[in-house]
Image 1 (cartoon, rainbow, N blue to C red):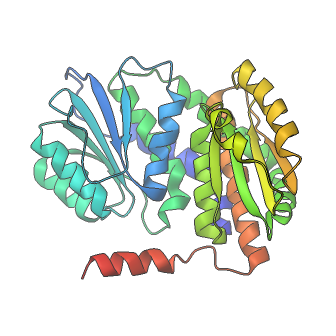
Image 2 (cartoon, rainbow, N blue to C red):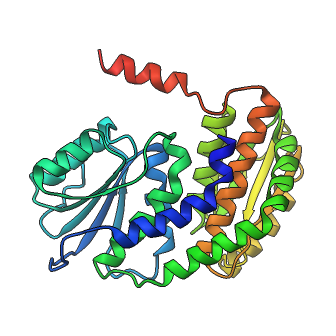
Length: 325
């Protein structure tokens, strides 16, 4: 897993090349809404992209992490299905649902049933490299989603420069990133991590939570400011082994940044520690990629401290086996 994380900037470079070379059918459809279907490591890219293009895209995006698509899906819907293995049960069902409703479909996968279905039905399919844990391939899936939206003239190509800038940022700061990640992992060890981020950055918080779940094998909570100010903040009434992580972004809405300061004052009375992780970059996509990389390292270092295998996910394999009976 460490090698895969260390190669993240190279993955982003390869993702740009794949996106540029992707052969998608000419865009002449009247697309009125977008659905991105995917789960786990294959699906988090959709959540993040939805936030990255917020305020830029003229049509609504719905992210689906289930078997069925929303009732509104029809011939005016662009459905993008993401399954790294190509065999994710829920996403295959969603793909078939979209086909039945005559939606325009683009598949992002490394192979499996999804690739076979796409070939048989003549669907657009972007193939990404295979043989890795799905959660380690977020660079491939996230960037392909952006290229698909660009192909359908929903966003411009400006994201490409942002990704290139992020690659330079990671390469320049790699040693510092790893050192910071080790310090954070030590503070999280033997604690219950609670992750907070401001609205518009929740995808990064979810990604961090999922990486801690799968790599470090720990339970984690996350919530979003300002929503948590209307409920969860009231629950801070008892001390415990809580390690609160606040993902900071200079681009966060000013009023939400003020809320963070006040929240720290309230939470600080009960949490063992409050860890602020500051993103870097001149754009939202740079800040996003930077924090994904840093927090990925945190999850692996915490796995080392806990002496667990960051790669294996036996309980998920067990679940799939039981469902397959």
